[in-house]
Length: 153
Image 1 (cartoon, helix red, strand yellow):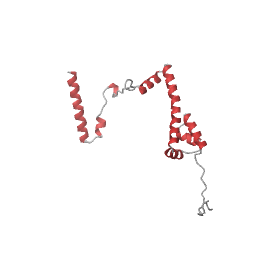
Image 2 (tube, rainbow, N blue to C red):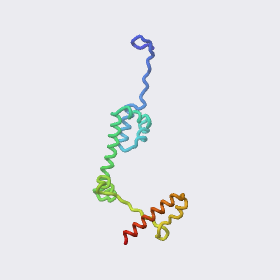
Image 3 (cartoon, rainbow, N blue to C red):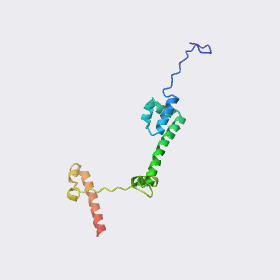
Image 4 (tube, rainbow, N blue to C red):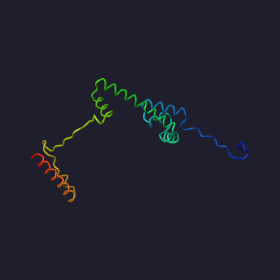
């Protein structure tokens, strides 16, 4: 088939978009309502790779994806805030620790004990170590014991 300039080149049919504007719109709506990227792509009739390629090619589309995900996050943030204000202790802790980590920390303490509340035995673990590592660990333990004895006296 000749093109309009008489060159005799074959005109190529334009391949229909795998991710049409309609599918893109549906994808963005699903993201904004809280669906994850893979589920949204599938529900919109596409796949993760096609979406990824479009996001890499199109700054505008990438920004729309980010905006849609922010909308979904804001819904959760609003509910988290309402729950904190209404007195839900777990939500209050979460909110404060994440909003002002310099002042609020969720510190957990774990204490290990051996049988009947006694010390944890290290002998079984030490058996698996080579001689050099055992020596280093014993030196560290001795130093700590000396420090403890010095600070309690």
